[in-house]
Image (cartoon, rainbow, N blue to C red; front, side):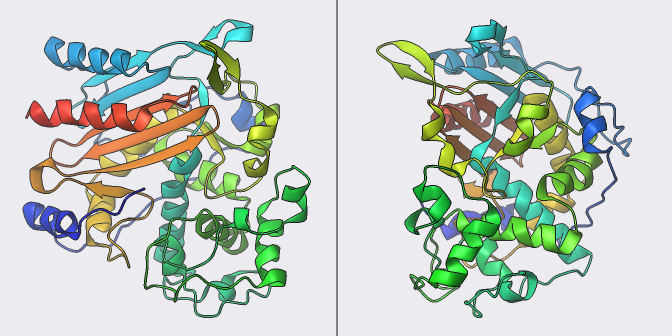
Length: 386
C-alpha cells in the first residue's frame, strides 16, 4: 500500500467542519456459537429506528455504469453499492464453488483477508471507550507473554508504526513445517527471538500483519472472549447479524461459502491448501469470513446510524496519515473517501466509503483479481455523478 498525502486528512476535516466527538459505540450480545451457526442472517434486530430500508434503486444510468465497470474488470464474486438514502445495487457473478455448482450470491461467505483489520481496530477502540485500556499503554501491559519491547504502545500497533519485523520474517517452527502458527506461537517467537526493531516506534509507517495479530490477542486477554466471539457478539451482533467466522470455525459452519480460485491456462482451479497454510490460524490481521449481506449491515451500523464513527475516524490523529484504524484515506474534500483492501490466495475484498454522499461500495471476490482497481473505478463513477 502507498502512503497517502496529509492534505486529504486536513482537507476532509475542514470541508465538513466536524466537532470532536469521541465514538460512543454500543454493543449487544448475540447467541452462542452453536446457535449462530443455525440462525439465518438477520435474526438479530438492529436497535435503531434511524436506518431507512434498502428498498430504493440507483438511476438506470448509474446501474448500467456499475455493471460495465464490473464486467470489464472480469469481476468474479459479489458487489454491493448502497447509501444512507436506501438506494441499493447488487451484482453477483460466477461460482462460489464450481464443484457443487453453487453460484455466488450476497449470502455466500467469503474470506475478507486484511479488511479484517478495521474490525480489529474497532474492537480496540471499544475497549478504550470502556476504560479497559489506553492507546498510550505499552503493549506489554496487556499480553500474557513477557513482551520484550517496552517502548511499543497500543497506538503504534494501530497506526502500523511499531517497527516490528513481520512474523513471516521469523523462524517459527510451525511455519517452517508448512503449517499455520496461531497468535500465541507468533507472539512467542518475538519473546524468545527478540528480533531487532526496524526503527523507533511511532516514527515511521510500515504495514505488517504482526501489529494486528497482537491487537487481536489483546482483545482476547482483556475481554475474556475469543477474538471471533468478540467480533460476532459485541460488534456484528450490535449491527444485527451474527454471520462472521474465523478460519478455524469454517469446517463446522453449515452455510454457503466460497472457494478461492486461481487461473491456470485459462481455467479456474481451486487454490492449493499449501498456498494459504501459513496464514490459516492467525487472528486479527486477516482470517475472518463473512458475506456481502452481513457486511452491508455492519457498514450501515458503522456509518449510517449517526456520525460518531466517521467523526472519530476524521478526528483521530495517527502517527502516519497513511493508515487510519484499518482504513486508507484517498482524494480530498468533496471527492475524498476511505477504503480498505484485503488479498488472500484466491480471494480479494475491497470497501470504499464516500462521506459526501454517504455511500458504500463493497466488493468480495473469490478469484483474486482486480477488486481494488474495480472498486476505485466504481467510486469515480459515483463521484462524477454528484
